[in-house]
Length: 480
Figure 1 (tube, one colour):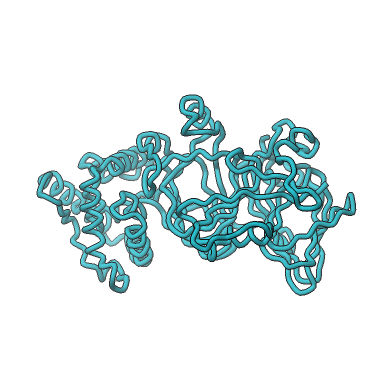
Figure 2 (cartoon, one colour):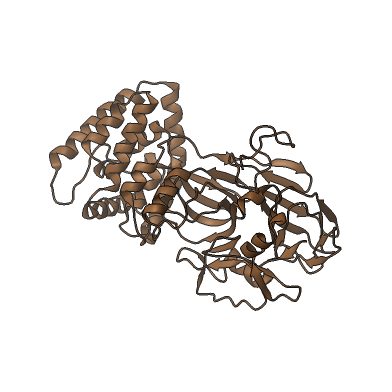
């Protein structure tokens, strides 16, 4: 039987203020007793069974009932094909981001199990945490390492980055050639030396960067900025010989790779110059959010992703990333393990992060939805744990949800009174106005009914039915 549920709100410092947060707006709309403080940050709404923010089922009168997790234990049939798991394998969230989250990565399953066994006080879960985001507004993030040649380009044009990495790392980067494994090894050494740069040196180079880019003026293009190619400025003159060697070596190698008139080099140069105003803008904003922090220069090493509303991307385990600004739906494997290295006052496990990363270098994995029908789009990531469906029911209309062999959770993003979720098996009607949260047991047949004057917009998350070999729907079967 379909049931209403509660959600759990997390007030992290990077969240949007109450009067601007989608999280706060949805929570207040769905729970009339919830009071929003305009000055408090409302960062995440959790929907699921994770112990750090569990959902409860609600009674017909709206009172808080049992934990969803306890209900699944007592009614395992609600899990359908995933009954052997005894729980939901995913966590569904709405997230509102006002300033950058930490530069972070999530461990793979094997590493998560080891970390949880060794340090359960820091790493509370033994599960992996791949994740997918679907944007609810304009969105920015750092996602994965840039292609190798883009990092080389930034080492050349941003002497502040060059100053924070070792001579050996520069040598490895510049001599790696086109061998992918050598490139990965070189990037690992560069990222290690960058993350271990002395704090005073980091502050000095960040100050130089901000001063050079003139954050009070219009953001210039890179060819309009006074770029002192290869000239690395030191705070007190120490290490001058090594810095000059790095600059000279970088200049020589850059000339040999980029200034031979090749079409590839010209294309890269054009692409980087086009992106530069956004990179500069983000770095300057990070310098106000986290003054003097190492992460301010991360957009030179990681991809800058900018998405409009309704787009999606997937982030697998062992990949560095940071959400910067915007509102999203996020679904992930049920875990809250985070390994951080920058842009945070929290614990930074730099050595672990450097060692665990895959060092894949590519553009971000933007996901394109599958159109199920005129009302419904499906975002399917390459993992078994979850997928998201985006459903729009025009005003004064109905839309049927076919029974699925697994359970689902739903959140109403838009809808007025008169919107309903109708359980066809029991005849039960549940109000589905904005902020409503619902649990659908496996094999539940429901109909969504919009209000007379307003569309009904619902996001639904469930275990992935469309990835893996030989699924009934023609894609691959999830490996439960």
